[in-house]
Image 1 (cartoon, rainbow, N blue to C red):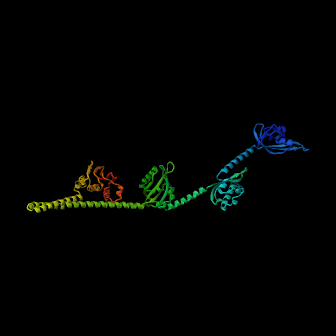
Image 2 (image 1 turned 30 degrees about the vertical axis):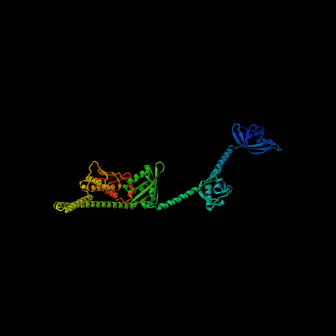
Image 3 (image 1 turned 90 degrees about the vertical axis):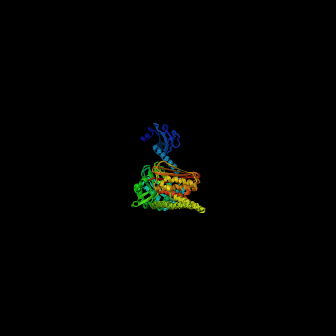
Length: 579
């Protein structure tokens, strides 16, 4: 007799007995060995009275398909105890075996992964006892797998705080079925505290009930150490920025975009009257404080720094949130951040006092220059007056005295040779005095200046050649070379001082003066082929000649250039505006 389930398993009629079993094809599942006709459980039960239970067999069904079955057989005895038949049970366990194989495969994969992970992998049962732990635990905390298995966290000697963290997290996962993430610290056998980031996830049985909890603990001690270092660095930075007399900042800008602040120190309140948070929250908060007249220069300097990746240095005026006008100096170092973003780290400081002092210094220098110009004008006027008095008074007196001496020599000299000699000596003395008076007059103010700057320079060149013995050429360019009295006197004195320096220091054999008038300016050069000098060495000494030249040029709002090298002579060039 065969029930329909048996026919369903074999996909055909399967008769129990010794000979019918020979028609079935089967193999022992564990060894793969073919099962003979006498080896089937039903044959053994009928022939030998052997009872078989749950033998796992791979079969080939009558339609050619393959299955895995569980085969059991129980012999039946008649009233006399003889074997009368057998009860044979076939159960199709193909799906169960496939599921078991898949579970075993997954378990092998899990163990292969867990055993080689550097993280600590543990499994806890519903009593919170550890039922699995991978080898990484011994390397991490110095505890063996054997020591940990079967124990709860409380039994491991953890501190109450650590044990409470673990126990509460595991209970929540078991109760809610939701994953938990937590951190904890544990002291190793060596006394080192290590920190772990742990994720606990539920594991379910076939009924969907949470039966265990799997945890993965990753060592984050290095990260914690880095966080500590970062926190200490931030505290040091805060301490530094809190004591800097200004605002430290970090800002960024996309190409052509707006300036955005990513960090602002608390010094912003003192410098700008704004909280750091307000500047970080609103990009235009800082730029809105810049005075309109200085905003263009601010944006130009920012764009140039971004384009050339050059140091950003801007000075300008702001109006603080409190309405106070201030000068600030902003300095920042740029660096690339991505393809089109520039990042600046810098500081902004209050330079109002230094700017005020600078303005006062400039005003003082201008007043001193004006005073110097006034004194120079007074001196020139005094020279002119003295020269005129010497020329008019002393000159006339000396001329009259010479005429009287000449008249006395004509009237009495022939009759008195001794008197003649004396009068001759007096004539020579008067002539020398007249010559000296003329020289003094020319030194005080050359009369040629009254004839114009060109005539004065021609006279000056002749005088220079005469007393210095150095050839000098005056080259006059095209154009009108006429100047007012003040400018003509100043130009004359500059060239006169230059020629004096050549005569005293240059050891030159040739000098040249070039004068030209172009585009409302009179430009002239004085050069020589002398020994030259290092301009910066002269700047460190009290060279009043060059100082006087510079001051005269500044008084005329002109431009002064000095070019000299040892062994290559000297050249000065001056350009002054012509009214």
